[in-house]
Image 1 (tube, helix red, strand yellow):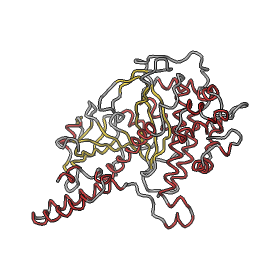
Image 2 (cartoon, helix red, strand yellow):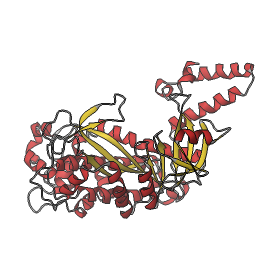
Image 3 (cartoon, one colour):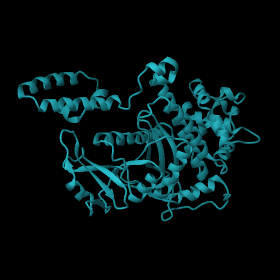
Image 4 (cartoon, one colour):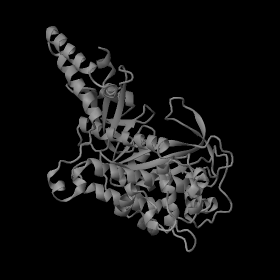
Length: 453
């Protein structure tokens, strides 16, 4: 447990060196998160940060034998509820520093991307949480309504490491249950974030990207799913000097081809079929109704083979395969959401009614993920050791083994289709024997058709 007497002894040994390497407490001071008396902000921050590694919540810690060494509950909640602390500045300062370290390990020509997505932030059992709203979860298979917020998140990735950059807990003007507290100083950072919470996601996104770029974060593309690929937003992002790659919905949005306005379905029929590219059906160069030139790639829908999906790119120089490969990096943010909620106790560790506490605790959870991501990168990338390791070791791959295994099996299937029946039976027999001898944890990554054939 964290000791009260020494700031250096507060962190577990596994975390201490990373805290020092990343200068986490320095970024805390840069953001103005300080106190003039009592327990220091650095002490309380580290205390909350390490709770997850003790496998205890705050109340269990207060009941433990070392309760005399930690501050009272009110001290911690005052820290979390402080509206003058600029938590966004802390997160941006920390992540920009870590991205600088990660970028040194990757080639300059390797794509670095910003990823946008939102996720549910549930507070279903709450009644009096500030700015609580009734939200719709479009990502859930149940398509449900819930009480809470939409956590709009901007992240950065180089294909091997994902790092959260910025976020906003969105409420709603129309469906909010509770409003803004009247006791908040309107000059504070907390009040500004409350006003942002009542904006829509398209209104927030350009500002989030601008803050990231102004912090020195290097990226070439912005990846987003079909909920955000609206033509006005795409134009705003391209005007900031970034290209957009995203899935497109079959909406009323129109595209220009030879001077004619066409829908996405009509665009598919006009596109030329591609040959020899597995899963890629067609592609076409076109222009959005607002004048932004784009390339649209149509791929087969794996869940419904008679249907197709469309991916657009404002970088028309990219090949079809490269557009799909870069868009695949968007999956990193889905893994991030799952990890923070199931393992890092996002939305579960503290149950406060203050909007400031939601922001501060979410930022601390994001900081946990950043520290763990850097530790993971150091454990798998020999180039982090510096010196001759940086010169001699290969760059870490952005294709994990599970994806590589699936692609290998798909190549074998394609080869089988082109061979005669006798050779097909021989190879299939050998392949089935090989698959039968694999552990179950590897079998689950193989395509279903291979396991059943």
